[in-house]
Length: 248
Ligand SMILES: NC(=O)c1ccc[n+]([C@@H]2O[C@H](COP(=O)([O-])OP(=O)(O)OC[C@H]3O[C@@H](n4cnc5c(N)ncnc54)[C@H](OP(=O)(O)O)[C@@H]3O)[C@@H](O)[C@H]2O)c1
Image (cartoon, rainbow, N blue to C red; front, side):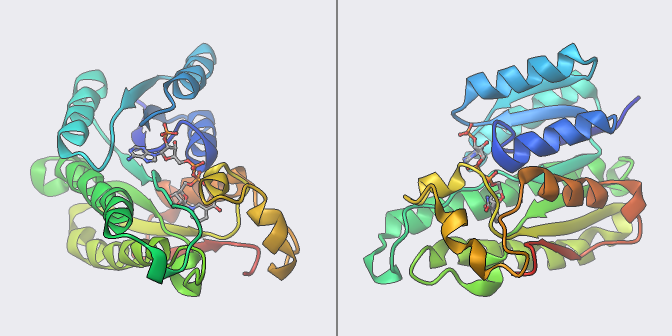
């Protein structure tokens, strides 16, 4: 049976592109989304039409009951889990920290940090060799913002990705002897709709001259790194980070 992976936030952007590439490489897929049902279902129909085994599941990853129901659906549909791409994430409108509200910080941390922990926890329970699982691989979506800080834009988002970096390092050590590898990809400026959510749809083009390679990245270029870390080709790689940022 083919390996099964869950991709959170697979309805668009990096998650959707990772799903396309993963299907091509023979994985069966659970495509998670929150609001964008139509595009998740269109993607699933296109993958299924090409003979791949894929399902969609709506879950807000920051809501524990939603996450539990999603993993129960994976158990029922596939009966196994081999990997997680902890991809779903948000940012909010560009702002200085002094103008940010507590509610905003709560939303950012709930989705980007707690949501990733919830999905990691439920994946580890199923993949750990301690529980009779067959091992597996988790790839977290961090960001170059964790190192650059995102001043005057979204320091809260950058801090949430710093938390993901620490989680990647700690969890890799915690489950390294349970057959599970934990790694992260740190994208730079990638052309997706996330920048419109910050209030500047053209952000990548405004900043691209500061990128050594003088261009923004494509979601597929991030997906390639994710798929490598997920795969057995990365069998001795854990607690590691790949920058996909054109040198920025
Ligand atoms: N694009 C970049 O330049 C860039 C750079 C560095 C890091 N990243 C990281 O890469 C990841 C993907 O980014 P992207 O640019 O592809 O973003 P995107 O185009 O905005 O897509 C975000 C995805 O996350 C889903 N999502 C958001 N909140 C969710 C929740 N609470 N529960 C479940 N799903 C949720 C969305 O689902 P719905 O649409 O269905 O609501 C959507 O599928 C994020 O973690 C982001 O921080 C992106």
